[in-house]
Length: 414
Length: 219
Ligand SMILES: Nc1ncnc2c1ncn2[C@@H]1O[C@H](COP(=O)(O)OP(=O)(O)OP(=O)(O)O)[C@@H](O)[C@H]1O
Ligand SMILES: [Mg+2]
Image (cartoon, each protein chain N blue to C red):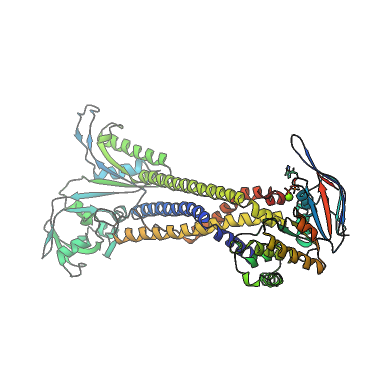
């Protein structure tokens, strides 16, 4: 076996230029495949991590403007969601609705400490909003059910807001004033593009002066798995609220609905399609590499007709010629395939380093479009197997052709 | 009797098939140094290729060292060539990217002999041909006569029963031709059976027997 390999290496070394040209095609193909694969994997990873921080199985609803006149009501009516809608949504769509939560937003209040103040008001929320908004706690905790049950005056702020309010001091346990009421800071979250101030829903309700309006309702879906089901649930919510607030089912402006689950399903499909496309492109590139190798091996067999004849004359069996040609092809393919892999992995790692080094591509945030665009070992092994098979295939037909060379034909002196 | 041909006929197919060898009967004894001579196109190379199991014949019987050479499988033919026959060609037919030693050793590669053993035996043959100091030279770095010595070393390394040489001096000047013929005569003196195809009467004269062939017949 070692002999055969050194025999093959000798012939490859002899035909350096040809070997290099063939090899380049293979390297390039593999290189592209690896880079494409890793970038697409990075895209998928990025997508998944973006979704996984948030609750994907939710539908958020806000009131809008009813555009159409309906049941004697004029067009352009403001639709305002209210506390009672939560219960109605849950009871009328019991088969698809898990938890229903709501949010009260106040845009005008200031949040003040002894040092400084924040504008932007506050959000009265449920515990589930931590996940809905994809908040990562830095210190303390988020609002919990007890806070809501006891209408506690507690507040969760962004870590950068905490710096504004308290400087280097530990924000947990500090007091702030909102609308002249004092609140205790119980947690801070990592600042992304969002810097909202969160207080318990019930507390916000108590501060809203008798109003029963909510700014948004978030429905957590259950037992919904397909895009159809998800879209249908969304339509059902619209109908339910249409009966409550008297607007037409097909009046799309009446509510702003963000169906995260449908979005998620759609982008998953898109990601799957990207993955498929990358494989197809990669395999086609590789195929052209293989055809290239096969071509070159044909030329090589033609050029070496005489040599093969000499080998046959001095006792080479057809099988050993066959083996030699195929192994030459495998050697070229794997050797240069590996060069392609190594370069591809290096470039992928470079991209990965660049992406994480720049702290992501989100607007001032850390939403990474590409996350860990790398190639793992199992892919490398798969690629090796594919390379060997590809090389053998590329060499097969030229090798079979070499068998047709009769020693006497080869030895005829031109 | 190492070679025995009985009524051998050979035609090359074509629109008009070319009957190249006609009822050839020929015996060659062990230890003979024989030349085959004849005009160009008379069928000398065709005959030698049949003797060397490089080509088939249409009818008749060919015994090589008692073995009937007929309808052999490719593998069997390859083995017989490897074990029984050493070839020497007009154009040397060395592999141009292998050095002298590797060229000489190549037949043993197909016999599965280890590299170390191969190289040792190849070196012995090169020494015998006076070529030991050129062992690592590529064919392109050798003169015609040196190349032919390497080719003869390659033919000898398998310890064949017979050496078949097609115009071994055809590409050499007269001085080198004489040297190469001297090599063949020395080998023959050591007991090797040798068949040489040649145009050159001077070469023919140095053999023990001349077989003349004309238009596919022995005369
Ligand atoms: N493969 C082939 N197909 C058809 N005809 C062939 C083939 N090989 C040889 N011939 C013909 O057979 C005849 C004998 O050829 P061969 O090579 O045996 O002659 P030769 O005696 O060796 O001649 P030279 O001295 O020129 O080498 C020639 O007419 C040649 O053209
Ligand atoms: Mg001839």
